Image (cartoon, rainbow, N blue to C red; front, side, top):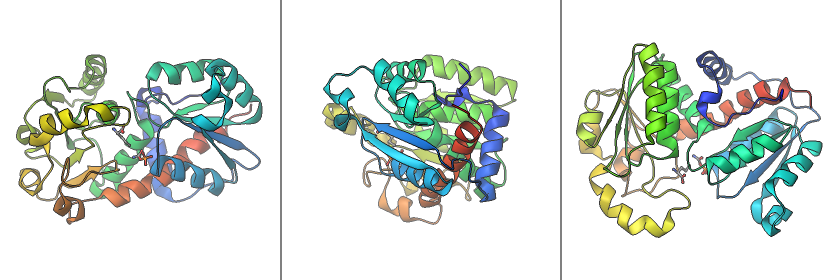
Length: 304
Ligand code: CP
Ligand code: NVA
């Protein structure tokens, strides 16, 4: 299969991640998608991913086709295999937001056009490309920095582990026991980090993770699809709130990131979200710049 997919950050090489960040930072783009259509199949809610991709596709001269799961025949039982093959006859790429990584892999297996992960339960690569771009813009570099992620060992944590390791950023994760990141992802990240002279640390203590960090990152305690666990999670994660007291332990010029949507008063306080160290709205904007770079790379050069 000739087409390129982005199913996780590790689908890209570190050199490609660097090229995407630099292209996104340049503020320059082409008409690479002129006459091309990109589908967005979403089985979960979205504000940033959907809108930034739709706008990016339009800016590149292409046409976005939004495909909510319940409004196409797949919602009535048509298979992923058949849907992917049919859509590949009309479209030039597909952005997929779904549940299990195996379901995304099924789309990729049957589609003959590039498939881009717009979030699964396991990974959120496009988000982390925008995060790495944000850090690079704010700090002037990536390699040698330290990022502390405080909270659930979820999709965002997994992609951060992969992205940081690939780019030489030390990654410290503080999650409660039972909510730590997937062991296979950690192992992969440790291997990559070792090759770049940096480290991965997984622990339970938010203070130890944040002390001296350049970047403090958090995400919701209850991800999409886990709603029935939200009460239990709120209790387990309470000591993992990113508040002013915790941020004070990081470097004085540390930045605070959150992929959004935020639950203010839960994983992050209002004062930190609105404070001078918060870069969350630049981070959200950078989704748009990165999506253009991704589409240029995957679709612009792709002849279906
Ligand atoms: N950060 C992010 O992916 O946001 P949406 O769920 O709004 O797309
Ligand atoms: N971890 C969150 C990220 C939302 C962008 C979720 O999966 O709901």
